Image (cartoon, rainbow, N blue to C red; front, side, top):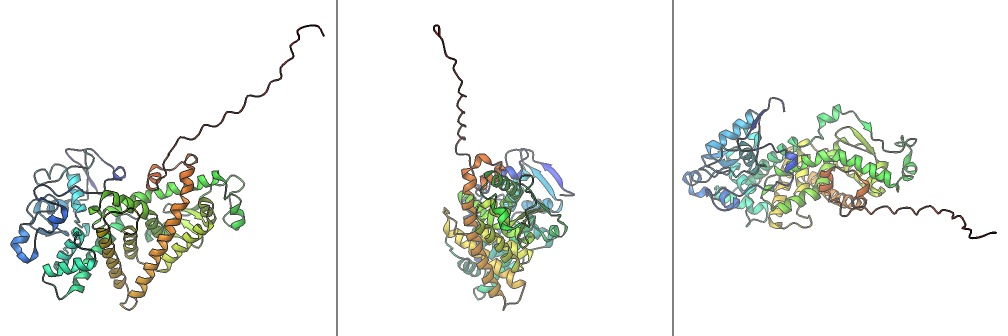
Length: 461
């Protein structure tokens, strides 16, 4: 980032975000505030007036909050620290693996962890850049981010919020306010962590990826017959998988960072966070990559072109390759804006249908909030009369993405069974659970060549 100021914290060492793949969950509230994050967020009852609000703790350090700043209740110290960090584009480093406890007494000790905590509890970069959050949606947004365990849907959250802020007669207005605020945060996270942009598309130089043996290089226009000749060749499949994996890996870290900034994501159990990212990455990536795709081509953000026949060869499933091209065409036919694509990616990632999730109550609530934000964004980009039809088409696309993802993960079984043939980036292997379960069996040694024994004569002929 040009113009960025790099600051190293006094108690730490640099930790790249790429090394922080598993650090999704923020530490609990500081001892000064007491209780769980949800209890802290609800400590101030709006019905008790300004005095009650003034007594609520800062959600960053636990000190006495002075008001609602940049999207969360915070103290003057954390408010000013966050504003300076954004305006001066400061990048911090931590020497303690980014795990410093941030409380009132030591909040100035590690700027990296303090800034990380600011973002985790919901402070908005855009609020610093573009001004204050409208007062009428402050309370609803806090309720939505807190995700109280007693709520099972956005409707109940909005209802509780409207009662606490004296807006019982306007539930739809409150609901829209929550959706608007969530949309702002999700869109900002998507734009900050997505390389498949319209700007890059206009300047991208495309080039074919060639992994075929010499003499069989230019196969793009030779049709299915030419492609099928190498479908079962393990070497060709392994080369294609490796080529795709190398180009997909940068997007993994982008999706991880995108997920970390989704409202309410960090409140989920860590195991649930891992499940959502591992099972949702492919859907988010292929949705973003659709902007670069054409009739029979998958195009990566470095300009590499994979033809449909190459996908068929890698997957060993012509139907899956066709389904992937068809899904990308579906996304493009929706003619979504960049903001709408970001919210669609958020809805894909925060899916309560993933196998193995434990906090289903919160997952259902977060998913409903994301769909409301997506619906709000769709209505903002068109007329009210077309919104239901567009939303129905988007929901159909989400269902299509789910089916495509299931088939893709099945195709990865070949990689899991033949891992010894593959040179995969570690992050790609980790996200798709392609582990080296056993050492490859030793090649049997060929038998020693037979030697002709000379007859032994023990006497005269």
